[in-house]
Amino acid sequence: MKILVIQQKMIGDVLTSSILFEALKKEYPNAALHYLINANTFSVVEHHPYIDHLVVFPKEAEKNTKALFRFAKTLQKEKFDIVIDVYGKLSSNIISYFSVAKLKVSYRKWYSKWIYNHTITRTKTAQTPAGLAIEHRLQLLSPILKTVPEILKPKIYLTPSEIAQSKSFLTANGIQLDKTLCMISVLGSGPLKTYPLEYMAEVIDTIVDHTQAQILFNYIPSQTELAQRIYDSCKPTTQQHIYFNVYGKSLREFLAILYHCHAIIGNEGGAINMAKALDIKTFTIFSPWIDKTTWSIFEDNQNNVSVHLKDYLPELYQSKPEKDMKKDSLSLYQLFTPNYFKNNLIQFLTPFKA
Image (cartoon, rainbow, N blue to C red):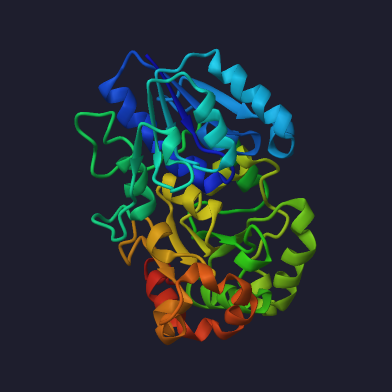
């Protein structure tokens, strides 16, 4: 049996959808499980023991229709028995359409439901601590498995050498691993998912004031200027705790460094999801337009905590869902001052108190 799971685009999505492979492999141990993803997300599923083949969605197929059709016809030759389309967008619709699989599963959408044998209507209320992002994906397995797990947690698999190398790298740069080490997700994937820089500096000041922790910034070289602005906005006493130039040069290096951290704090996104997959404590600041109900996975108000403007000013959302607030995100962010959740943050930091 050959099964294809399609999950393109973002790192957090690819990591979250990887839970499907554990469930599939347990019921069909001899099945060949293929995962179609974008190249930039490869690192979060590298060395995954339940994934047999990683299929990279070609860059030219993202913008070129002819290339997309060529790729879909190439996959058609693989003769998959089952296709699970988690992504559910035009490109994956086309790939699913061309597949000769006898069983095709995706989420129910009026314009594409005719492509699939089974379409799943997503539930609106979480039934488990795993959250909707996990539960929705497990729903896709209902036409395939006799018993669908209630909860599965995404996992990232680092090698012993990666862990050892990152440990050596950190200690060589003055990090003391027997003291509190916090990673800060200082920037989101774009301006509409990035907590205002001056507010983030206040958050970091609070962390250092209460823990005297060593601080690492999660950013890539192209974001250095913005990360520097946050650093410059922190108090001088806070700056002494920040190891600004200590960061991973690749996603796998970042993951190996994150493995040694006690917590990650900052913008919702892939870094937070990766931390949860490594069993690192998380404190997440959601963008005003992102649906917290879906992505606050494995929240327990202790090890995994999240805050959203809607938690404090629900009246702003009485007539609109979060997604309709996207165009107003920057102005709403300005309303979301750190004072709203300062006490939540201090409580989260209690185990690390200096």
